Image (cartoon, rainbow, N blue to C red):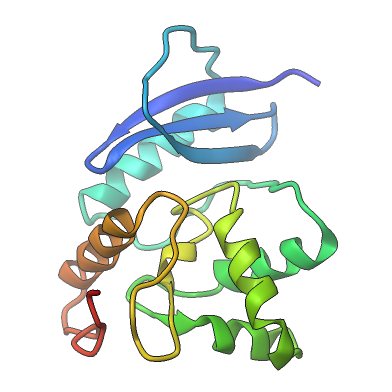
Length: 164
């Protein structure tokens, strides 16, 4: 299988993209931009939609994605995909949607291993006490993304979020 890649210079750091001919398979924060890129229509469309998102012109991505993980993690990421721009849910809420309140920690681990950040909006998942906890890209990025989406809303939905 042939893979394509690019790096996007976002307001919160570099994002490395990896895609097949038909799907985006990875979007992760990286420290360095790198030098060799092998682009295709999926990487180009991802960058276009990321530009729109960061300019507050896009609230819902429409990219073909294909994350790789266990059946449980795929189910968690599927629930995360349904969290709308400007909406926050707790890890407990996600576990309830999966039908297993006892899987809160497993939900947190799956959230932390999300292979397609921002597109699968794991940054919209917060602690049950409304605190911003856990984010693979760093808490400061999670806070930035929540604030960014709050600024893109016509009303403030995040007044109760605790910035620890």
